Amino acid sequence: MQYQNLREAWGQAVLALARRNPAVVALEADLGKSTRSILLKAALPDRHFEMGIAEANMVSTAAGLALAGKMPFVHSFAVFAAGRAYDQLRNSVCIPRLDVRVCGSSAGLSDFGDGKTHQAVEDVALMRALPNMTVLCPMDGIETALMVDALEHHRGPAYVRINRNDLPFLYPAGEPYRIGKATVLREGDRAVVFACGVMVSRALEAADRLQAAGIPTRVVNVSTLKPMDHAAIVRLAAGMRAVVTAEEHSLIGGLGSAVLEALRRERGAPVEMVGIQDSFGCSSADYPSLLEHFGLTATAIEDAVKGMLS
Image (cartoon, rainbow, N blue to C red; front, side, top):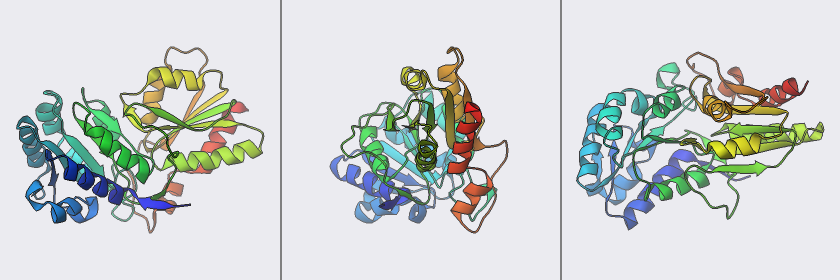
């Protein structure tokens, strides 16, 4: 299976977009080597702005650039992009509905070595709560690049949650992409798993095990966390004896909450959520161990389905 680092996929896609669209500019909060905005800096230095460790100022500057007709992409770790600049995103970007794109890099637990201060497990909840904000979470490098392309013509602000690590290519070849689309990766008629980000590969692994146990399980990649296609979620969950959500985020305010919002009027829609309990992250020697520690595994998804069916 082929893998790609999502940060590298993001940086390459933004650079490619900037080469063909002169309105694209990048702003960075002193983390360009990590977020990969450095790729644009090397190729188009007059369109890259190093703002230092000043995320609030960076977002305010991006708002001004958007008003001047530019298409700013702002970069920082997700914990800082969503947290430190929240007030500026709310008042200067979301209220006037400006075309500012926010890269929340090293999202979730993917910055495994730096611990809870650098791990954003609540960023989706913060960004989903902002009116006019679109919230995206790609599952692989292919989808990351497709998202960047789609953002060229998307109106209004957008937040994109980027994993720090190499993830397997899963996006179906030739599958059209659009913001808001939920993509079925595996069909099944007894259970459905709605997943995003790194948990999509875990969901597919769980589906393999469940199939072997005689439980055909549908797997859906929900990479647009807002605006969510509620009609699609209802349709894909219809008739299922078990509905499970899987995310690398707090169980409060993330994918699980969004799916429950979509299914709130459906009778007898059994839903279980796999995610991070009400806690911060922690440091670890490696990423897989951290996912295991927080129960973000194929086994957890499999157990959730079987538990509901029993």
